[in-house]
Amino acid sequence: MNLNGLIVREAGNDDYRSLVELEQKVIDAERPFNVPLKEKGAYYYDIEKLISDLDSRLIVGEIRGDIVATGYVQVRRSKPALEHDNHGYLVFMYVAEEYRGLGLNKVVLQDLVSWGQQRGVTDFYLDAYAENASAVRAYEKFGFRGSLLEMKLNLES
Image (cartoon, rainbow, N blue to C red; front, side, top):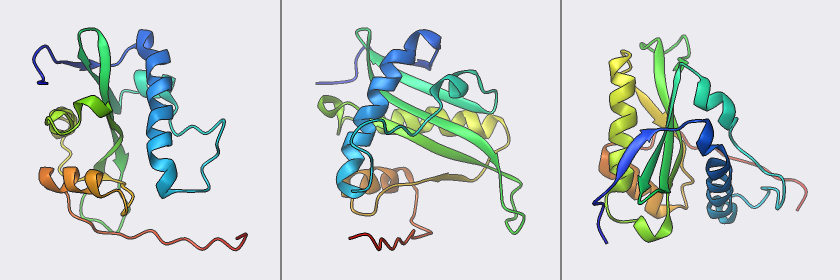
């Protein structure tokens, strides 16, 4: 399988239903790394806002009319202690299982980072579960490096 016929484009209102379904696939894929995620009714993103937000770029990768990848970057204010005023925050990174390992994640990342650079952004962040080795590897291939470890304590168990 290859990426011939791949179209990367900005998501629109007509993509809303497909994006909601893909969001659930992201949540399902991350559930093993975050057990407290709700079984039903969990959601991460305000997709309607992301589609219309001028400080965000939500894209889809399409092959033969099917959305097989997603991702978005949002320009955010950085903490005052940092040298950069703004940064790009990358999220909703998803590639359909049958298209993984073909470089589609890199295509999506390049699009989003380029969009951010056109807005003067030079620093980009994303979150990945440390145990999700394939995701971490994909981001490291692109040049990302670990910088912060989130730690949790759950007293209900």
